[in-house]
Image (cartoon, rainbow, N blue to C red; front, top):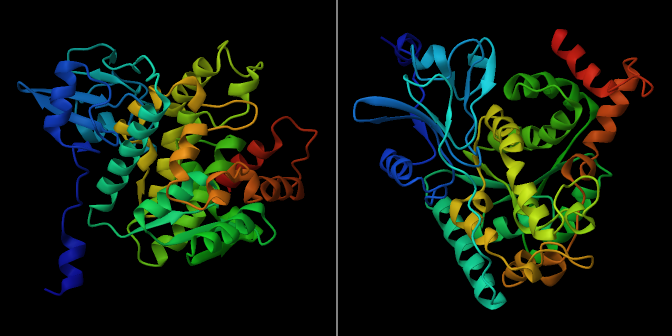
Length: 389
């Protein structure tokens, strides 16, 4: 039998029952109800006393889906009841972050919730705790056998991840985009080489259906955000890497959004600290999109800034290390300044869908296809049309 025949006749490899960490860690977290047990996230099935428990971490960092038309438990079989990707199910429904379900449950039970620790009042101590947590998370990420590259936009988030991982830098965008220019200047300041993945409209047309199927989403904003991750991931995978590291989570954890300072209609909280917690609680909705976009490109996602230890440290930052009208992500930038040139550590940047010009070009493609701006949600309608075709 030839090697090719052996491979083609082999049974398909089943997905692991648990992703993200080891079984014992999750068993201990289930017993203690510890929401941040020192992992990069987890989801899947854990057996305890002969009974299967379907679990997902408190921030939903590992995607997990169940069939909409049956109880979201591990029964009747893993292949039929739940999956790590929406494509594997007939009617996928996200399993709730922080929840657990057993064959005896009629619905998932909330096991973990985001903790509400008191802030560390001494700013120097809080900053030191944060720096130690970030260094621990990146050290753990670098200790794997995976060959890692970094999705690098030139902003402080991806720059700090790139510096601590000492991994190759890749930026994606249209030739005249802000992100490509920012990444070039930041890489030069850091003394690093940079690979530029220049896009053209055909790349978006080709990738949109793949992303929609991988994420189970078709709304314009999700597709615009996922496109740069998928397209840079394609090049990284083609260059032989196993994993793509990202700076995701920094804006939510450390106060990176203008709305947490303005406290406008976009937030319910009346304080910056409360508004930051609101953004952290939004992560379970966002993260599966980003993870699935990277996985669809054939890579393992690596997000050191979303490690439990970093989240725990972020939750304890005092107000003066969060954000004000002059500086957002103040504490995080101070940590970054210990490792990066000041020009990079203090740099503001645009959201990836705008900085890469992907949102602009996707809007242009939609209009060229007859989906005009006067139509409600015209880009989403265009995305749905690509799936139909």
